[in-house]
Amino acid sequence: MVFKGTDRQLPGEFDYTIERRGGATNAATSHDYAHFYITTADRDFESTLPHLCDLLLRAKIPDDEFCLEREVVYEEIAQYHDNPDDRLFAVMMAALYPHATYGYPILGTRDRLARMTPELMRQFHGQYYQPEHMTVTIVGNVSFERAKAAIDQHCCDFVPATAYRSEPSTPTFTSPTGVTREILELPNLELARLNLAWHGPGANNLHDGYGLDLIATILAGGRSAPLVRDLREQRQWVQGIGCYFSLQRDSGLFSISAWLEEAYLNNVEEAIIAQVTKLGQHPVDPSVLRRAQRQLCNDFIFSTETPNQLAGLYGYYHTLAHADRAFAYPAEICTITPEELQAIAQRYLTPDAYLAVVGVGEPTP
Image (tube, rainbow, N blue to C red):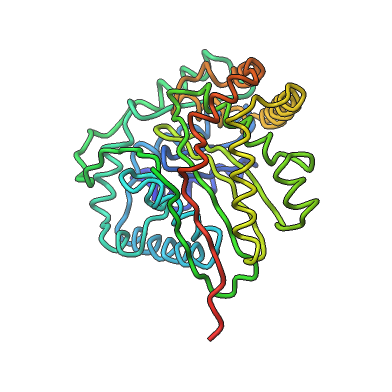
């Protein structure tokens, strides 16, 4: 709805202004923040930034455009439910975060969206699109003085803050006390899905989060990683397996996901837990740790090559933690020892307390 115009710009005018200069613009959302960006030539910086600031600070949110956009989101929700992996992820998040907004789908639900009105959205915009909630990141051939002058001129006319009646939420993050299991029967599912999940640290403990990044890479980051080598290459119990740590502001998510024949579900879960248990019982081989550190450092280098990537990195860290931590990742990754990694595994990846979300095909009538 932010892109639907202001008193100064008609719907669609912003896109035309950026694209006729060869630029690009888009937005994305997560549980923790919304991200709006433009990419343009440096010579067009002063002529494009005012249009984005105008949209962000003075979005009109017209009633008719709201109704049209709601239908678009209804369709996105329907597409989301057609994807078995998306459905299983939603079930996993709801089960792992029953008392926090991380458990809500970012798209929302049809029922919740039906209760939303243009006026409520205008109130939401008025409360949250305020300077204390905003980070502006500029990367490119633009000096600091030039960037600051443009921001001071165009990103200062905020509308008065409004009160938005949101549902009260006091997030609590209680890890499972045993093995919690959710089973979802899905139509036309050719391969079963197995997702195991644990709570991880939030942005206030980046060091442990970086350690879980290393553990994810050690477990499944390539053909020589034990979960890939053992379960896919040798036993051929899975068609694919991945391990991920997702850093969130208040509570991170560590997950292991496998695509497999239903007959191997128990065997694969046992094999995964055996590898997790091993990490907590013994320090990893130093050569294995060095390989994972090198892999993550290389990934970091390749993810910071373009102005878009750099702007996103700075904005991400400044929103969740501190901007000066944006480039500390490679150095801190390389300071973690095998003993530290073992302690991190013990702290978060308990082999007898986790969430298992299983997707299987619907039984034949």
